[in-house]
Image (cartoon, rainbow, N blue to C red; front, side, top):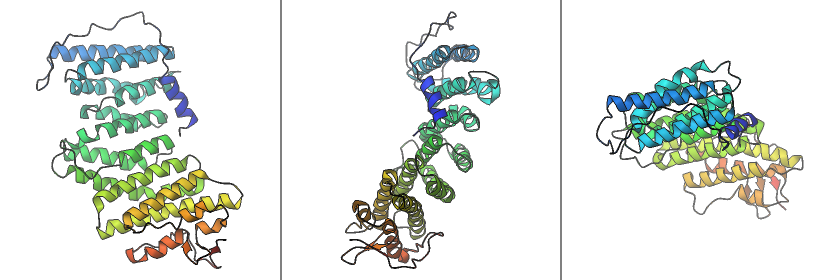
Amino acid sequence: MRSTAVALVVVLAVSTAVTSLQAQPPARVSLESDLAGRQPTADVVANMRERISYWLDVMAKADSDQAVIKAREGLRDDYAYFDGRSAGYNFAEQMAALSLPLLKGGLENDPLRLLKETNIAMAVAQMPQVTITPALEAMVDCKTNAAVRYFAWQGFRDARTNILAQGRSPSELTYNKLQEAIADETSLPVMEVMFRMLELDSRQPEAVLGDFWQYAQTRSFEILKLTWPRWCELTRNTGGETLAVSRRALFALHRSADWIGVNPEPRKQMLQMIIDLTWAAATLHQEARSKGTESESSAMLLRDCEEALNFIEGATPRKTYIDRVLRDGKSQPEAIMWGIDKDGNRLGVLAWVEDLKAAGVVKPQDASTPTTAPAAQE
């Protein structure tokens, strides 16, 4: 589930082939004790800056993929050393400041620009401290390299708890950035990791005080609502790899049910969103069946949608309006939308719509009332 361009860059970035460098980095300062509860001295911070600057300079001047990877591994090892001695916060702060010039166009005319940007992004994404966020924000703004944006949101997700623990301002900046970026993103791998950013447990981490976890939950649901119509359209019109990302989007929405509970308005909105996605997947599935082909990806998404509907509605026993159609290899293509089995039982997406009318759910806008009798199951 990766575009060809992104996959190529990432494969090159994680290659294990390396060559030795002629120049050596400045000697790493020796920290014999953990700095927990203490700030590193000015000499230690200066050593961090020297080594980061060295590796970034190697990266910028590299003329081979091996040299680029060697520089990224040097940054990784240095971060692990200082973070292991409770100085990762300071190292990430220096890394953010020193990498910004390269992340903001400093490599524009470099023939290895994509590879170098991606390797810097990989190094940045491994630092979940809140001090790394300026670099992550610059990576989000990289319009010419989807791999950089992918690692940006991976980094934001790993740093999310630390960001929320800092209070209102950094939390708002992060979710405003996410809301703005998700509206225009076109890369499926990047969208997938953005939806992961929107997955939140109902249980608040101990490090996050006050109502900031609730703030993140509320903003995540709002962002999902804003992007949902566009995503349903993409699901309906593109299919293919989009369907796998749609399952991730559905999972993020499903997780919201854990904290929304029985609150009627957001519960109605959530049920409607799942119905809209179900309709998009069912339309795609019906068209494939009409052409004599099978779409396992759309079938998987449809089953996931039905599971989510059962969970949120609290249906007992579990309803199988969609699953029964999918399991019946002889069903008519249109039965996935609306059908009747041999015992007179309702089938398809519209059976769910009927059941959820009392909760305020309506047919998707492009859904028309069947003008013929529902498809019968043999």
